Image 1 (cartoon, rainbow, N blue to C red):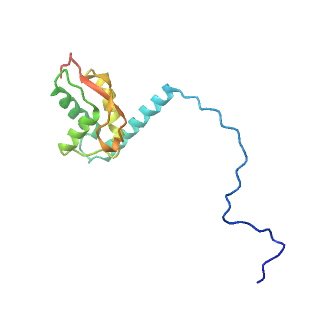
Image 2: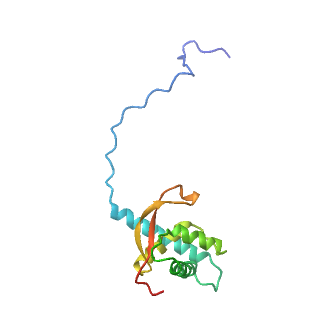
Image 3: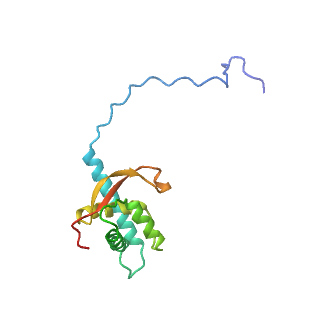
Length: 147
């Protein structure tokens, strides 16, 4: 088959044509309250999933993890600080089942404060590699505790 002499010649090594200019989208409005609410909903969904994975007859994962967390915090000195990831490491070292998603631990951290087991004391860089060095909340055992 002979090449068509009337066909346009195309340089296959040339850069593709630039796309037409489009206006930049308007910046999204960030609503911190809505983001916080979505985070809470996601954590609760992770807990529901973890609770649904356990063995029939066992207490749900979240209840076992909560009891472990309360006991672990009760053993910490009043002037110490910790992150939920520290409890998570102790939980795993004790041979307890790992939840399907580590986001299940987030609501338990909020529960520490809500139930006056600990108070929030700032942030630190995460020590667990899978957290990619993100900021994690720091807690201190609540001084008025009766655990």
